[in-house]
Image (spheres, rainbow, N blue to C red):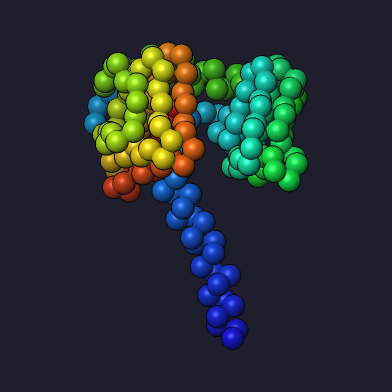
Length: 188
């Protein structure tokens, strides 16, 4: 009986870690459009944030934010804290010095990512694509409900997705990362 309890308590965290790797996605990137980019953009203090907004942060429905949630200079965060609302695993920084500092670091990282030469332009719908490391530009980028995007690379691989207008990720979507690549090197 004790072995069975040990296995269940050990297997659950491993399952969660495995799912996080398969479903994980991150936020900004590196320095060229080569097959293996030289490394991710330094996010500085923004790296701990799962969500970092400038004017408002609005959640509708059950959402789990891994990491901190920050807002600066805006003041409205809604849809977190109730039983059917969003859950934040880190700290909430609403218009404080930490959120302001993270916004500055995110702006620097964005400047680097925006200066990169694209691997491919004109993207729109990402559903069904299998992409190698690089920089991908589009107007409005979208991943349809229950869609799948595959990112195939190595541990050093980096992907940067730049949307000129919006990025919409539908419910039930999957971003599959293969070949030992890390979700920490995928930037949107």
